[in-house]
Length: 115
Image (tube, rainbow, N blue to C red; front, side, top):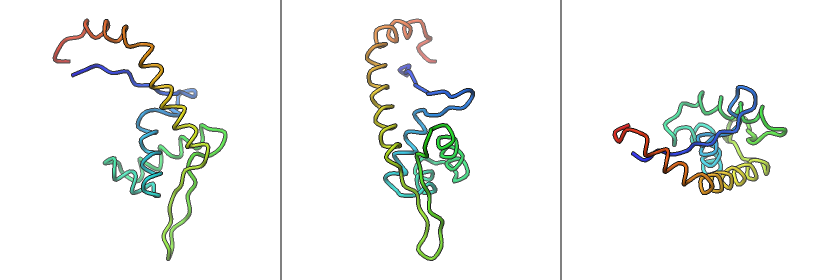
């Protein structure tokens, strides 16, 4: 097992953005649906909706816009801000991991091999 760093953007006590939320946004982009995105991540619709709601409340503008169901079905789509947020988060991950790799390796040596 290789230890890894996980990056979360906190806003007070709320996790505004983290790896799972970014993955959910990417899944919504792919599926056009909060429910389908949640299912693809083995997550209930309620949990997926809660995560989307938290993100939408934490950012100045919504990251996900929804349309109600009906005869033609509903759906969800990312806003341009969500695309920007995903890109910035992925850049942050890449840069932070590169900057901290030597210390992560040293710290990893202090951990038990079996976790």
